[in-house]
Structures are given as structure tokens and as C-alpha cells.
Image (cartoon, rainbow, N blue to C red; front, side, top):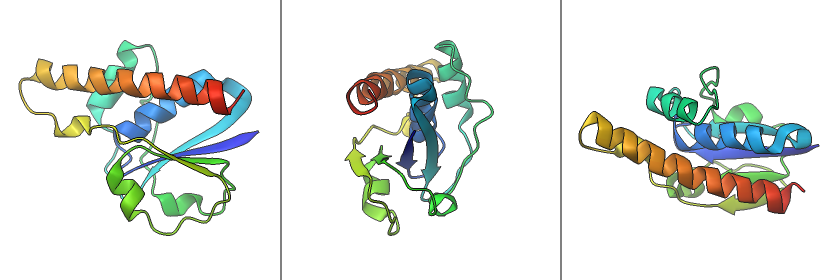
Length: 138
């Protein structure tokens, strides 16, 4: 079974959404983890927007990348430039992939405008993770 780590700055939005979709799409094909170079807690709006797509991430926790140093990852996916550039040395023979998704937590405007941005980015991550599972885990 493959081990996949999704890495972000604070492990609160993008990496949590990606973890939820990867678990959903990969099923028993992979062990999915997410972490941040910092921990900010799981963003309630990320939980809400995923629930709208029938994926429950409410039990996810915000984890620091150092918690996973002993796991032999087959893939490490960074989902923001900050994590890619600032992650401490992470020993892995696994393939490193990167896609810089915008940070929905930085959205401004009304509550509905902010939720629309969360949904937009959620949908981008959904497409990326579905493609990842199709091309890398099959």
C-alpha cells in the first residue's frame, strides 16, 4: 500500500481538503496523511465546504510535518509555495509533486463571497486529487 503525504503551511484548509478527497478517491489503495510546517487547526469553513460535497473532515486534526518523519512516503504533495519553499528537510525517496492552490483562508468579502472562494478552491483540489489517484495510484 502506498503512503501519501499532503503538505501545506498550516494544515488547516488546502491540505485538509486534499486529504479528504484523496481518502475518498483512493479508498484502500493508499494511506493518506496531511501535515503543515506549522499547525493552525482545521478551518471550520473547510469542514463546511467539504460537508457540502458529502465528505466529512470534521474529525481531522492539524498535524506538524515532524510527526511523520519516520513514515516512508511514496508521494509528498505540497499544495502551496510556502510549504514547498520552507519545509524543513524531509527525508523521503518518494516522488515529490507540487501544485500551488490559492489559500481560501485569505478570502475577503461577505460570508457568501468567502464561502464561494472556499468552494472554488475545493473544486480545484477535487480535480487535482482525482487525477492524482487515476494516474499515480492505479
